[in-house]
Image (cartoon, rainbow, N blue to C red; front, side, top):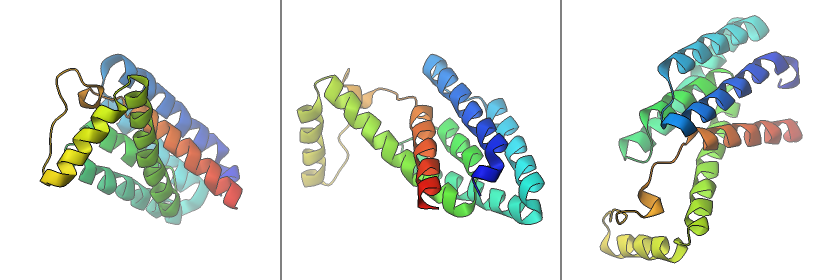
Length: 172
């Protein structure tokens, strides 16, 4: 299914690259970008797969949105990232959207781990997580700690989406 929709997936990746650039510069994902992406995704689903494709796009969007909304609810993500994941899901089938969402969460975790290691704060972060586990409560990062700084999550969404698309293509 991926190879016959190369143009729409090219549009998706292009939109994600734009989102990454904007997120890196301003720490936000514009609603206009997401709305344009949703419209283009729904249109391409309808064009390539008819009404069934439109249903798949809506369900894929709901999957990405719902899972990321849970992360937003616990303070682990910004609203723009939730909307961006919904946009990604609209271009995909429901199973591909679930894969892209899971891979984006994994990519975000790996990016966070790389950042913590890069700044030499791995042991500090592990110690804080151990204390949270023992105390069974959240302990906020110290002032200036990299774990407490904003992360442009559009990067993780792009990497996760690309990784999951590659995975689905290999698994075919």
